[in-house]
Length: 300
Image (cartoon, rainbow, N blue to C red; front, side):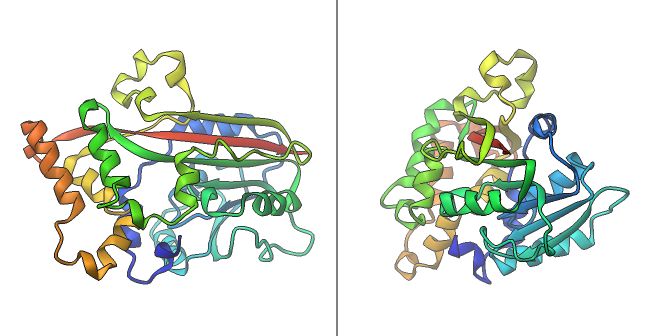
């Protein structure tokens, strides 16, 4: 996670390249929530990808605060907030704060919902959920979700190339911060909400090849009706730009011993185009899907 805090990390590229979470998930989250609607805190918000979606899709909340330990990420979110038109929705603000630090709340103030999108794998999970429990009103909602390991849905023969880029020892593999990346690869299946603190617990996941692209939504089987299907249609150029937003690529680029080596993302493109000549058109639209997961709990 330290890569995201560095001043030379391209936060605007990160924000623009990342996929959006589907409307279906926010509808599901809204239906799940049985608590009040005064304050929602989005922890580990980064540049506000999920925060701004929460503002739009959970508009019954009076106030939404995004927090992140990375000052560059918060500055990016604040800049975006300045250019975002707000009507009668929630009051929005962003603050630099760690995952377990809720000292920015007013005396005796608690939250009605606390969310953590694509970040909980970096946290000490038990410390984090105890901090959440201490700052969540009874019947408040605790929601964790995320995604990992994209595939080109229409090109299953390229899956191994994707894995080699991400985890190959001669590519990005050694540059992931651990244990966070391994925890995320496991879709947080070894992390569980404490039933002494939370009830109505839901822990679910889906793999990328079980996630139909959005163009086929009407034909989805029951398993692909999972509310957190994350897929995106984009040009191949945009997809490669997305791959370059990961922290491991940023660390690889900064390692001087790689200065004379071929760029691993460029190598991936060459392999893709060798297998599928039509991908020489970098403006070609590809259907990208990700593995994803969510954990939900209601404060007792």
